[in-house]
Image 1 (cartoon, rainbow, N blue to C red):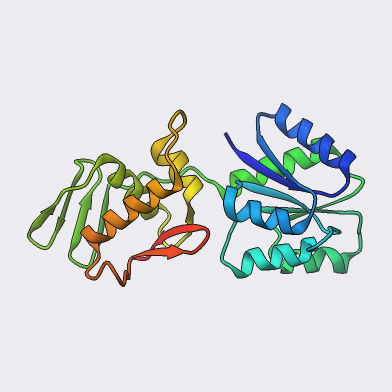
Image 2 (cartoon, rainbow, N blue to C red; image 1 turned 180 degrees about the vertical axis):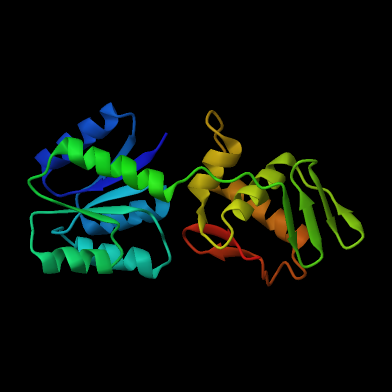
Length: 226
């Protein structure tokens, strides 16, 4: 289920957005100030954020800049009562992906959310093989080797590495790894992901204690640099 975070301090607007998003089958998280919103983006890894600009504790501008400065690519739709061009430009320059001015049409906002999710989460191209350094991974046969030696990997390790390889160079959140590799109906913890990544590093990195390929993005997830 696609997870949407709404950060809005107006109780009526927040309730209305939550009800409408849930009616569209989204999982909805909410926050009423920027600090809680920021923490939820880090910890809950939403697929999209609807972000009001005029928030207590941390403004939408500050939150957006902080998220982007930390390398997080979560799609953001800014929501504000301000309609001036300079405000819209500033929001987009800080890393917002779209901008809706209050008062707004809920149908239009939902359409923008759907369009943004389609653009930012395209169907990945299936990857059959991965090669880097002296490592070869065949995802069709579930076989891997390093130099002349075979590497033994579990199905979940193959799945984790394949997802990272399909999004090579991009940060993959722990939430996405849990959702895509373990799937719904399972309840592994983020520690499970960390253990699998540590195991993969021991198998594919020349120096697992100083990884060059399978990198940690602290507080967010992992990325594969090949």
